[in-house]
Amino acid sequence: MSKNEGVVIRPVTVDGIEFLPLEQETPLYTKSDYIGMSESELRNIFIYRAIAERENYYQDHTPPAFGDPSYSRLDGYMFGLIHGYGLDIDDDMDKIVIKTKSGRTVMTVVRPKTTEAYKESVRDNNRTLRSLGL
Image (tube, rainbow, N blue to C red; front, side, top):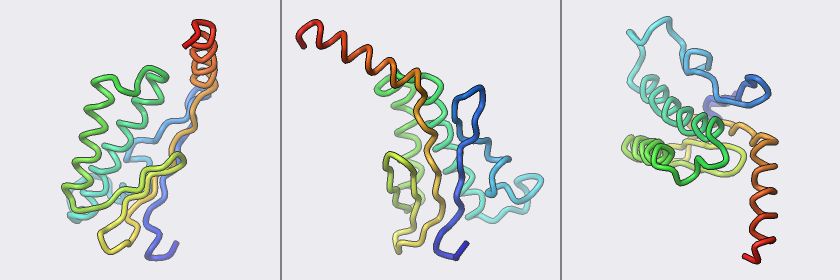
């Protein structure tokens, strides 16, 4: 891993559903406790925890999670924390990349894949809307 790549965190599968692991199970957690961690190590753990809470909430409450107040709160908290630390976020369908203003990648979080139940729910909703003529 080069200095410019940052830490890459991948989801784990639990009962057939992908979730982001706890911070203790990631390369971010380098010590046995938080004492002795540098400010940047703690910052990365706080940011990762916010990302993991948002992504895991979405996975656990899909499909109606998007737009519900709890998800919106987690989403706002995550973006506020990242921008409050003066970092940028590249949030796309496959991964979330946290970068410094100078462009150095701090961390990359691979997004959990959507479940088949979610895809089936979307198909059912679309069929229902089409049958109603909407």
